[in-house]
Length: 144
Image 1: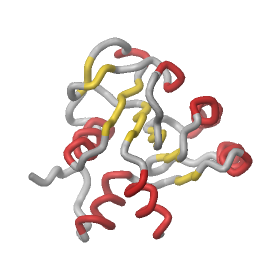
Image 2: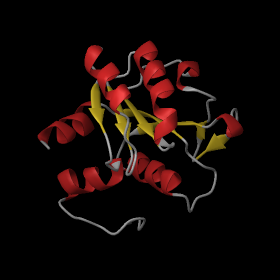
Image 3: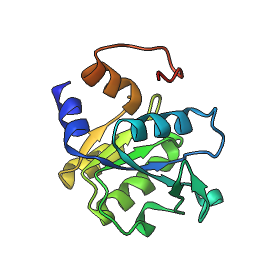
Image 4: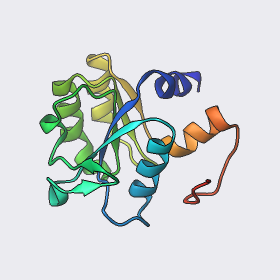
């Protein structure tokens, strides 16, 4: 698990795929939380392209982002992951992170072939709390 701590220490720019404009959705709660702890979170959602979510411009896909991305954080169904993984390779991302309940063995193989870290079935917010705040908290509560 120290690999996760290292990832969250090293990479501070997250492309978050599937962020919603709805502040009650888990993806939006996670985005807000990660922003609070110093991460630059770039929202990716084709239906909200060009709008702003939590103060950040929304992109249609990660290949539209002009700055380097450390972590590609995925809030989409497992059957959409492989195409996202291919784009993660194209942009030179360092980590493909799949949120709770999301897995893709083929994407994992692609990440291994390209020396990109692969994390599946884990929440960035919960892992950050665990390693840096030393607490487990019920999701989706945001602490102040």
